[in-house]
Length: 510
Ligand SMILES: [Zn+2]
Image (tube, rainbow, N blue to C red; front, side, top):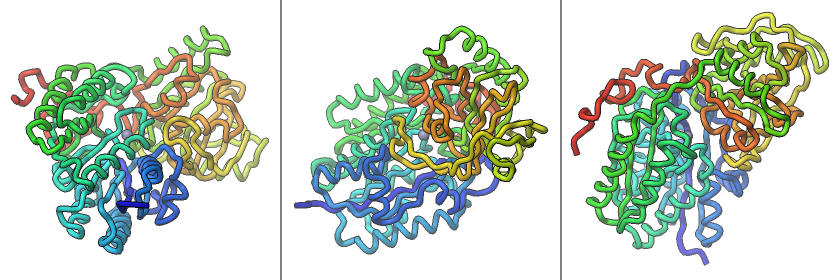
């Protein structure tokens, strides 16, 4: 028999404040917008925070009220109207079930910015507190790219972040958050939090948790969790494409009833972060050299080795990129690369033209680079062949977001370049092509290419790296450019490394 009742609600967005326009409700509807029972139906058995919560409540026979689960592809500031619509929906469910629920779990992102505010998650939890008061336990799970605010720390009992990037532990994070929530409800844990903020904003590909400084820090965090009273050590490299005061690294630590232990643990980890700060800055190849290097490597590999994968980091839609950047495609064409694939170029005009032209016909298009001046010029007079047209819908089979649905809008597989040997997936919607199923859904096995270009910073590694002979992160231009120095931050808390030149002595004295 069920003993406790918990309510789950998820409003997730990673906001790139440098992007023009706003993220509207339509953008959420294009990715994920589930209410009530549909949350359960659509996210059960998926590798998502909500999926993990559903799984553990079923195992433990705990009643779960599913309010909503909404998420939009990372992009511009969230329109106030969209935020308030989802917030009010969640608040209305909380009011309705207020007398029944013993706790609330909220799988959020942590880097949401709402029109007129510097934060989304803090105000969201504050508005819940106004209804339920201070005593009802609330646990929040976050993406490690969250820029964690004091308001969020103050209003929440516990924050639990992903430990992996690529994020392959989304469900596990939901489960861990839920365990802490239940222990708190049952009086077995009295969570207290302390947050330190080492003044650092890493170059994005260095945040890969499979190797380098993040692997080291995650291992250290796990070892600190062995200490008495330490419940959870979170490591947030943050999200640099956001011009808000909370932007940057943070280390929120949860201890069981022992604030001093939380503080000591957070400071230990933060000192370690500072020690390795230079490893969070690196030089990566620009598009022309990266394509040349990929060609050289591809010439040396056999068919069984798998493709050389180029990551178009600067135009990663998963970091707010327009997904229509042309700099790498232009180089592929110029350097006469063959047997290559490119995912994706978002260009609804070209999709429409190709559909009008029809499968099996040739068309001359002006492709990409149409929304701003950050993602390269449009490629004009591109003679192409329309190989396939799809509805743009497929499931993730790879390790990240396993089982979740994708909606590219109407989608075209276009062939261009030397001998038409560059396959480009052209879509109506922005989407980070981190799961290789995107290729199979247009009718081609990704393994058979020599060179693959993916608009992704690091998530592609989860599904592409096991198939690849080499991976090369490319320092390409765009709204997701890898180095925080490539953006004009006005509102971040200065000084912060490497935007500002900081020496070891500039670090706050504990
Ligand atoms: Zn993330």
